[in-house]
Image (cartoon, one colour):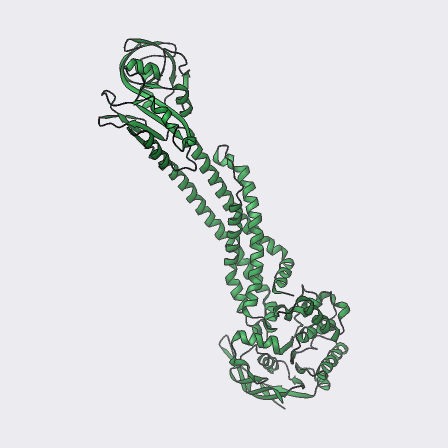
Length: 388
Length: 222
């Protein structure tokens, strides 16, 4: 017989109590695992969305002039001639070491024009590569269609209002005629005041063939530091200023941090409840076994032997609770993540998380059993056996 | 030669502000190989004296030497080691572990020894053989009669081959015939060389012992 046999015998004898402890720990671990998995899945999903749905790097010419705001970035002065980027710069972007992380390249030429429809106004004309632009701006909703032929124009909602133009109407820009193919639904940004034409048409209108004002780049950065991509782009485009959109990064970090903090807080509460369940159950188990422990002490068991018996029981129970909790947490998160995240997120069956869950459960189980184990170990055998 | 030497032992309990003097200046020597009964009515202090002898209950004053070892000069853990090596207990109320079989109960003192499993089993079955219970080794305590349970408790006390057996009211829960059987078992163990000290209030048991020490009101009366 070994001390472990005494522990296992006792576990078998007190099945219902131990099942209660296992359940308490399993629920705690399952909650932690589910929250952790869902948070991780949401973090990945959020990163994917930010990376894919919008530019996170902007390339503009090195400029000293006044700038005009576009989106969240500053571009060089529209009404002043500055040193533009050229279309030859676009292929260079694909030559960087992290080119595999580049999802979309959207070159643009900006310029101020006189537009005349039913109404008339000065406006910002943006020449774009429509397929790339539409890929990057998934949030665009177009009343009508995006320009697909030469001579077609897409209007921001406010521009359409000022120019009193609707899809199908004609519009004259600096004397050249365009047909409105579509109007953007209000986005709440500067895009509402912009006129979008095919890049080549804008170059012709503004008299800047082959020139670009800026290039927006969408890079997939789940695992790569965006600063490295920025550095590599600066290397291949020495005359350009390459900037990462820090705002998007900060927003992402903030969202992830909030989710993580929430998960940590809930996990701490749930684990504290689990620890209390273990503590009270082990305390009552020790109390019930006062005589038994008295016998052990009387026949020569040291205090450390008693503590080992109690802690081994706690370890077995908490490891079982940890494994069951991990399984339950993973199953629960797989089933609920799409609803919680409101997106098709994928939960990863990560072995490191399994080890973490079991380790956490063992830590909580053992930690909560230290006091009961000490109580048991310090039982006075004479008192326990009613000699006193 | 004295195996047990008790000098000036007294024990005072303080229970809820009420001071109870359980033992008052006990001097006692017990030789190796003796079978001794401590007789006295309930509350006379015999169980307290037995627990002090068993290295479980420090006296308020006095010294207790067993085999020349000053029990209460030892640390708590060393006293546990002493109990394991020197003493076999037979407790009042039997005190078998209800979820362990007879042989597992007998194996208990060996759980903290370094002996291999096979040797442990052999020792346990030897002890059960000594009390005539090998055929019931796999039964749980509640599947055994009172006398059989008492014999399992005796087997557990002797399995580790200690030189001293302490038994507290070993026949207290048994009918007369079974009580006599148990007392004869103690007699037989004593003939094998074990020193045995019993605490009992049953005068019938004195027939089986070599010496009777009468205790009354915490003192040795005779």
